Image (cartoon, rainbow, N blue to C red; front, side, top):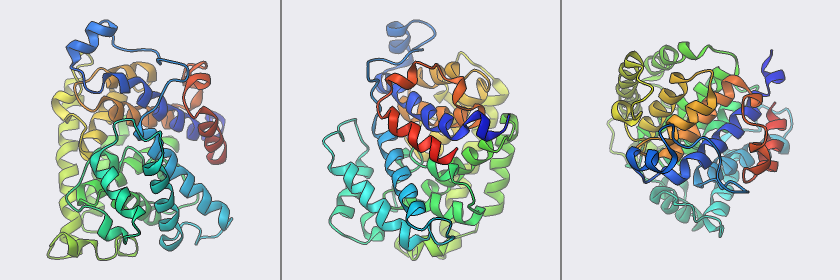
Length: 342
């Protein structure tokens, strides 16, 4: 089947929301506490009707709305997703999220602080933090990976820029880039086992590539010697976590807490690696992958969110339990976005 027939964009968007909702009740629990509550296999079904998502999916929707608005404002134009067009749309959506009464799902401090300063009208370079590399940078980036007709340089700049509005540490930028490209490649049909090597190759190719059109003078605010030195730090940290991913995949212990080797997922590069680990341990059993991600000692909702994005981009929307689509919060909007990008 083709990506259109599989509806991989829909699979990705629904998958990340399902993972987010499945992992939300276990986020601050130990693995022992999770298995005591849900049994040895962990949670395998969504809770509630609607099944509530967290800030991870809320902010993913914010990014998606901004990108879709940009595309529809200038249909078919290469300038539709230019920095000057995208920045005010992302800012608007992030501020709407920040001020919403539904913003009560344990959002990250860096996201809250950055969005508050965006709401005050500060330039994004002044609103963000170059010290922050929390997983808020890349748990929301999947829509960038789903865009069609975008060249690699533009996708990279956009992935890093949406992170930079709140999380401007170079590792947050690089991890967001890798997360978006993982979604793109899987949606295009890359075999799951090929993904770690492809990500490692991207780290090597991009190590000293600074997207100045998007990031402007951000590197000077970090006190780096040059823009290339600034961004290289992030790529190097991502290579380090990919080393840990390779180690975990070699062990292939499906029963172990996925956070033990690749990390707890509170920071961007660890959320990427641990989300990938859960997907790659169960590349053709997406519900099992989400269950493994939700049965973890770290940031379970963000890990499962990314796991679901990867699984859905790879396998399509049909792999998810059909009744989940009727119960997931924001299901109608997820479906509409999926249709737009499928």
